[in-house]
Image (cartoon, rainbow, N blue to C red; front, top):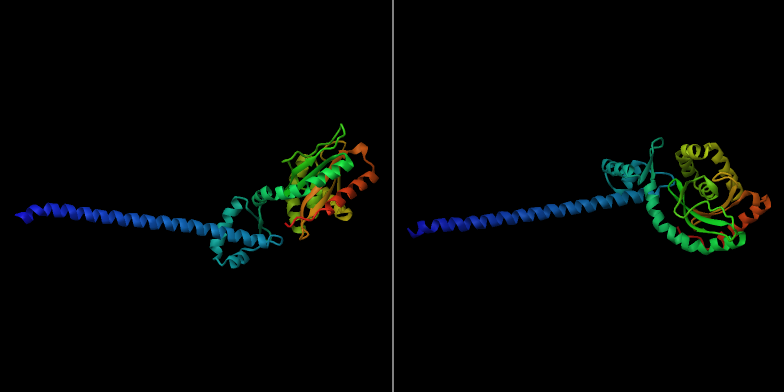
Length: 287
């Protein structure tokens, strides 16, 4: 009878232990599952970073899917899925005609956040020196995707000044003296991509055809400095010159904004020489 009386207790305790083991197993399975998810997430991030690095390496010429897949040691379908997301988020740009991938505008925007501080610190006193010599507004502009982004500005002491660019303002590459200087010295393939992308904007906002911008590029490359007359605003003139890094890549431009009626051809040439000389006096940025 004692055994019979003890049976319910035994069954109850056995049930508790069984449930406990089941719960413990469930927790282990859940932990393994969560850990697997974390590892899977980390793996996806690492794959994405590897793909971005690969595209960056071949950015100037562009990279095909097969080359990227080989570079990161992943199957092409896997790489293609990740590329599709990066394209959707504008971290990459795809040249459909050539089937080549390039870095997209969103990456340039992110890179701008760090690039602008180092370049601004390096060239701020340069802007001040040029400003003292010309008594005009001087701008420091970097490339941000298909735009020029003003990151610094100094203003002369004359009562009437052409402010032009505000700090933080964007303008289509190819428009204005700094935008011309930046665009003119990019590699030809990048330059043509930007011209194609900005052509509708040139016409819509400035009434300028892309062929006109191409003629400015040709002139700028010949003179080694740019000038922009009556483009951004009436009776305004801009003169600009590119800044190259240690690898010979254009990374920024310095431009002057002045009043056309105060300028002669000789004065324009003199200001261009001042800007170029002051840029040359500074150690080039590493990147």
